[in-house]
Each structure stands twice: as C-alpha cells, then as structure tokens.
Image (cartoon, rainbow, N blue to C red; front, side):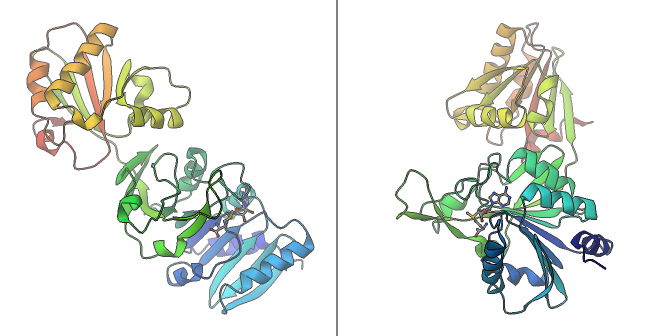
Length: 355
Ligand SMILES: C[S@@+](CC[C@H](N)C(=O)[O-])C[C@H]1O[C@@H](n2cnc3c(N)ncnc32)[C@H](O)[C@@H]1O
C-alpha cells in the first residue's frame, strides 16, 4: 500500500499526543529536540527546497540536528522520522498547507513556535504571528491551553530585534497579560526559550551587524470575560471589564485610548467604526482625577452616550466614584473601562457589583 503521511497523522491524533508545530522551521535544529520530553510529535514546515536535489540537501542538514533521528518514511514533500518513540514530520511545503494537514488530521496544538519565520528575511509573504495566523492556531489549542513561543509579534508588542539582547530590558514585552479575541495570554518563563535564540539580519542595516532575537513564552487559555458595575448618584453607569477594548469597539460611541492602544485596535479591528480620541501624551502621566474629568469632558463635547477607555490611574481608582457622582451633564450615560491585567482595579472592584 502507498504510504500516506496524512493517514499516519490521523491515526496518531486519536491518542491526543502532545504536539508541537513549528512553521518556517528551516533545517538546522541542534536544540529543538531538547523538548523531546514534553512533546510526542513535532511537525515542521519549510517550503524552501523546490527540487529533488534541494530537498535531499536540506534533509541531510536536518538529520545532523540530532543523532537519534531515524528516517521512517519519505514522500516527495515529506520526511517522517522517529526519535526514540517520538515522531517528527518535516514537510517541504507552505505553512498554510501544512496547517490544513494538521487540522484535518484532528491534532490539537500543545505548542506553537512563531520564531524567525522569514517575514523579515527568508521570503515569507506573511507573518505567522499575525492576528490571522494566531487566531487559527489558538483555535486548535486544547481545552487546558497551550504554549505560544514567539520572538516577534505585531500585537503583543514583542520586537524581533533586541540589540545586544542579553540585557533583560530588551526582553521585556509590553504585555505580561493579554487578551486576544477569546483567549487569555499570560507570559510565563519557559526553560526552552534559549533554544530559540537566534541571529537576525536587519534589512537596511549592514549585514555585518547581526542582532540577537530573544523569544518570549505565553500560556494561552480560554478567556472568561468578567465585569463589575456601579451607578453614580447622577445615573451614570460605570463598568470595569476584564477584556480587550478591541473586542467591544462596535458597542461604544467613542473611545479614548493611548496611541499604542489605537495602533493595536487598528490591527485587531481594521474596519473600526467608533470615534476614537487618541491621547498622545504619556498615558501614565494622567492622575485618576484629571483623566476621568478629561474623558467625561470629551464625551460631553462629542455627545457620546457610551464612552470607552482602557485602564488608567496607577492602581488608585477611588476618585472615579466621586467624579461621576458630581457629573451632572447629559453625556455620557455610561463609562466602560477595559483592562488586561487580572489584578487591576482590585482597589474598587469590591465596592461594585459583579455581573
Ligand atoms: C529566516 S529562516 C529561519 C528558519 C528557522 N526558523 C530558524 O530560526 O532557523 C526562514 C525560513 O522560513 C521559510 N519560509 C518562509 N515563508 C514560508 C512559508 N510561507 N511556508 C513555509 N516556509 C516558509 C524559508 O524557506 C526559510 O527557511
């Protein structure tokens, strides 16, 4: 019978293996199989070799990655190997096509590696960390969640080039916690991160200058939306919502956000219809009092019934109550504040009603 990798994948998927997917993997993997103890199946894709000769050469390089690798079967566009009892599938194919094979086989993805995928150099026409890609990947994460390793992300604000990045300051992504669609991302430490530290050449800068990329890891689980409400003496509804403002943009008349948040909203909701007032000055400079008044003033001038914004106030939010209690204008009728860090607003949540 002719060997079919898809049939093999389907039969393996039935046992719910711990499964790692690394698109745009390249062929040099001196480190990857140190993850051997955590993952049962590794699927790698790279469309670089187009001819028989190139595929042979790339596989020869790939085999040098780990002396335990044994070729099990091959087809024109795949090499299937064993490493002990584990499986390694290497596809000489486009990432999207390989993703479809994974989906059709019925695998859940326990770990997704979005590292050095060629979107800067290496010929990729898209980024595997783009919202479109991570949405389809997270959809295949199991109930208990999965691990997401990335060295650059347009939405998490992880840069892919950290000059001399052994300095920890360059390893700090902006969001320790994040909510993307209905997933919650929590940054964690993973012992595997150093395995994916690689060189990168920056276009436009002399290629002599090589820069390190240092990845980060996020645990991705299903997000459970939470909301607390309170009504002021003047009838204004205040809600504190644990969610990404981008998930609610269509429900709000106008939003007041930082430039960074506006950039994020545009990436996540390209056809945004709500009015947006962007605050260019440093968001952290705003005291709770000053900023709450500013929001109310803008809502009044623009006649916004519902005004939305993101967390502010440096952990001190009591003043929001008194300012709303004293606001006697017709607008706004509701103030919705969204936040990402689960512990934020602990100082006032207990005075509100959870809905
Ligand atoms: C810069 S190399 C990095 C390889 C590997 N990630 C590493 O860190 O060593 C990028 C690789 O992505 C591959 N690639 C780019 N776009 C791809 C796509 N759409 N599908 C499959 N492979 C792709 C290229 O062939 C190239 O080998």
